[in-house]
Image (cartoon, rainbow, N blue to C red; front, side, top):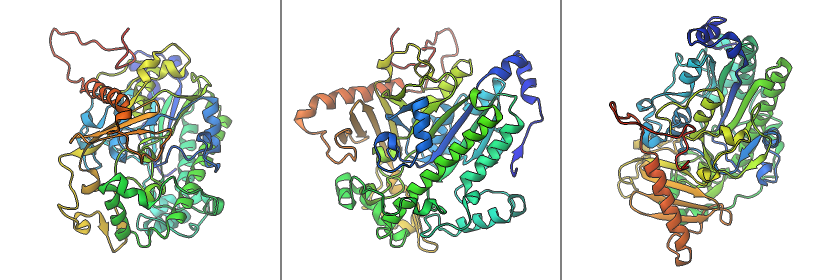
Length: 521
């Protein structure tokens, strides 16, 4: 194992003792494996009607537990989304509202600190991209998009050669089968590391964040996945002609990508095919993880969550990656829960967020939700207990680091800003043009409202118009839906004002024990 252990055996039991928790109580607590992919579009799965079998394992797990087709990230960018996942707080209050503000994160408690305080061993295997560091976990085993940051000697020659190959992809793509076998691919190596560590610590409760860097670019995959869906990928819902309808940010993204990635539009079909092969490879590795845990006898006492930090256009609007807007291809995420305490109901139509994961884990651990957490616990819902369905009738997400929109009229020197490089070919979709300004969205039932700081509005029936092309905001026929969603968004904005710090003296601060925001008892 090429990763970092920090504690000695029995440290978790000692910690439990210090907290007044007996060894037996520590051992019987459920384990948690929080499986996060990076940039996986939610609707590319058979359970949502996609014609290719990209996620057979996750689809089976979804039926054995619960899955949500109305789950959203807090913001469709890795850093803000991951900080919100770890803290249960929205980017507007963490202040981590861009990839450049991760270390500015404001919070009272986080997932890993809470778990350790409650007698759990903690482990990160994979991509971090948050405020955490090697001191934050008992087992620290980082990977990034270009490999594993340890010496070639430690990771072995075959893995070192593969990581060197990744470094030569210009952080974009490879248009042939990747060298080596699946054993050199990062997800396979990560599952090996995760299984080895769990095997050494199976008698103690643990929380693991298994954070795959894929299917994020560089878009690459080995055989058999490279050819698995060749010639079978259906067309996207839209094409490049939809960019003008979606606005300047979408047009600029395509312009930048064309400058930074040579022959991008010609290669779009190959990029989509490779992306879908990567999803299938990830799904197979999740299945392998679960099979190994079943052999160990760990599976039966482990709660699993499968999710992604955000999505990918995956060809929508003739684009790949992310960057502009709050459209469902990048804002909606897969979310599957299974394991002990999860009722096998399959599809749930409740509206949930990745912000809700931390408070749910808190209650499943038997603890209280820390002050400052804004997410709502899903424990009662997932466990088949009574819960107020009205509380989960909507969900909010956001994007933008504030200020005015920086537009092409201000500047179009993408190279000077760093969004584009010609040598090597490079394009960073998260840049001044795509991320400036502020925007919010609320999803409620079939309807979705997007609203920005200038009062520009978008209204879509996402069941009838999943690509969000027909903006109904100014249509008189839909005035009732517009007003209802505007009220819902205003309610969310007020309810998610930062609750900390609370008054220091005399005033009582009342909150729902499950962190429900809208439910009145």
